[in-house]
Length: 602
Image (tube, rainbow, N blue to C red; front, side):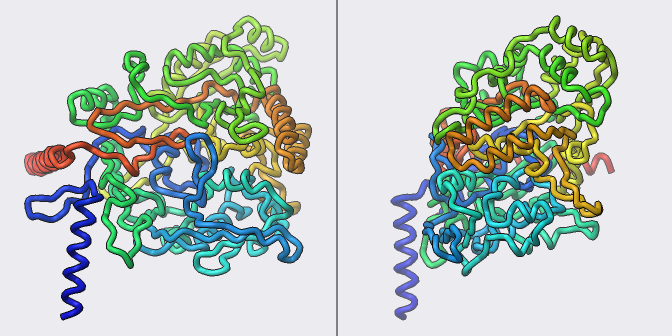
């Protein structure tokens, strides 16, 4: 009897809590609904959900920030806050080294298993494996033996990261470090925990990781997890049932995450249809405004800077791009203001590092401190003169870009500029491939071309992996590229940057910056490195991307992160049950139409 009374009391308390605190409404049966389904056009299609792959598309960052969470996060001013980390303490005296112990918050993966210290250990070791290319490696190089491991001079078991117990992570450093700077880096999407059991379960016999290719394979520790991925049609993210939920307490389902589902519907080749759906009330959020309509919505959109530089990378193994004078001339001919006018939501890239990356102290701007290295306007005559002095005035090459409206528009403009210089330029727009029937991503074809260096010029979104300029700049030095070691060579040669760029003077600057622990002095060296990089021009920065979105007034509680991504955890949809009924009715009609069409075809 006591047990029955206890259960009744718990039910009453839960109902009271739901009534008092929850945003959930009751259904016709008297049960509480799961929550709002928010129809949206979130961003362009993504074909890779592995946070440790080269993040060369801002759309990847936007979606994966909904799925994963690291030890820390950044507030709107870029100050680090605890996320997966509950607390930490310094243990300086252990073996005479600088050591910290990090206690984790109680959280669970989207399959219900707790997030454990061993998940961070595995993820960070995966980054540092010599045979695993990962541009985020330098984020961890202050950890004991991290750099030696990546360079093949130590084994992965020598890494100074260990799970002391289930929820305590021990991190040993080579020497005393700036913990604020380290914890800023821990907010990076690249340093989130990963599940070894899941990744190895879906590894092919050839050693390829396929775990991020299908929604039913992926487990996440963030607020949302993917439930459906249909190429060119739908991306469905649903609230994780376990995100910070305590199984020992009767907690309301929307305590930490209010929306039940974020439903992205793609209109392939018809971005205007997305905007029309929003204005007609069939869509509530549009995060990728069509180019043709951006100007008219520029004043009403919510706009923020991203830590992303849209960049053209030259393949220096192509004889046409061997000389830095040629690469500088191609950059010089581009009017970056003209690209801004095409995109509306962007700023001219007057350097490689965008504005929100920190300089000497947190909150200062590396770009503001460094000033303009590149001109925002074009100098066509200067470019032609430089090409003539280099002895290169013609040639054929291809610009490879992702098959999306923004990247193709930029490429078409640049093609025209470089054609006027005398070159025969082709634009190749590459799209990922999917198995629609099995809802599986079979290939990110663009990523593969990038990873293998199979391009002449490639257009990428250079995503800054942290607020520190060292990470993106250091990738151009062989010892910091993160591309690992050629294990088949007798001397275990390091793989350099994917562009083929190599310069001992630049390498020396990066080594000097790494050795310098004073943040202000280090920033001075990094400005010199950026200047040198853009003199050699293995990459051609075009614009600093901005994020812009519009939404209907029935939505509230949308927030943004310092990285320029969305935070939908507390987003509310007014009268959501009414809209939900419409969505479900439309889905039923679509299903019936599909069945009817299949029957007619048969």
